[in-house]
Amino acid sequence: MSRTTVNESTCNKDYCCVAVCPTLTLRINERGFPEEASEGTCISCGHCMAVCSTHAIAIEGLPIEDFEPIPAAIAGVKELDALMRSRRSIRAFRDKPVSAERIEALLEIARHAPTAKNSQLLHWIVVNGKEKVRAVARETIEGLRPESARPALVEMWEKGVDRMLRGAPAVVLACAPASFSWGADDAIIALSYLELAAAADGLGACWAGYLKLVAATHKPMQELLKVPEGFVVRGALMLGESKYRYRRIPPRKPLSAQWI
View 1 (cartoon, rainbow, N blue to C red):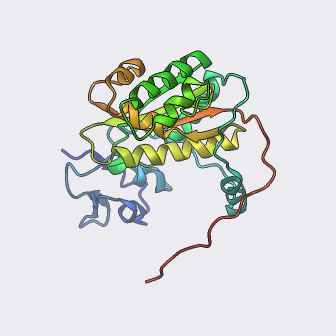
View 2 (cartoon, rainbow, N blue to C red):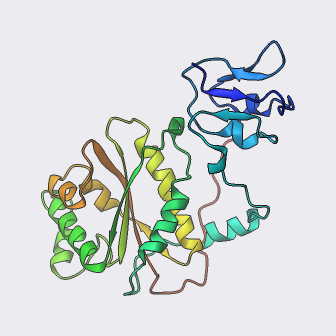
């Protein structure tokens, strides 16, 4: 049974919906109207409904009322360039909590990141509060102890230096089903959205690589984080207000690009 319906009385036959469909689900029928060509291939991405100027197309399970209008004013490339260039990986945080509302607003932005096949399978874990983050940092060290290649990190921790989570007031982790082959890609894209959104909101962020490494295989860490059954941590970010203000943008290596 077709999930896509077209209101022929309002359809203007510009065929934008057919052109933007990523799965080629739509085609033009003999009467010149769009219709669902291949049942079961629609991924409910909403592209067709988002592009239709007359609201003539509908997908089962995607009410048009849930679609948000695109703002008339969107930051241009210069503003985005300034944000992305000025972003820094923050490893020194102010001793100030980050409100749950502030983190949730960032997650709302991150959940709009693209996902493979519009799967939207990511699950988020938020560790908020200095003591909770400290406990996660401690378990990260415990997970690294068997790794003889990292004795310096363990030694520094025992001397009171946290190289794991840097005393951040909050940590956000992105999880994906272990069976989903695109889970890591989806998580990294979504975390990148979150990192840039945090910078725009005046928060600092830094990728928590050691935490991700340990959480992937260390059972006690998975229990501490309450990772859902069948899910794997695919990435993590420390969050908090930067202790210091950066005033300059460091140079980067020259662009390396190949044109074919």
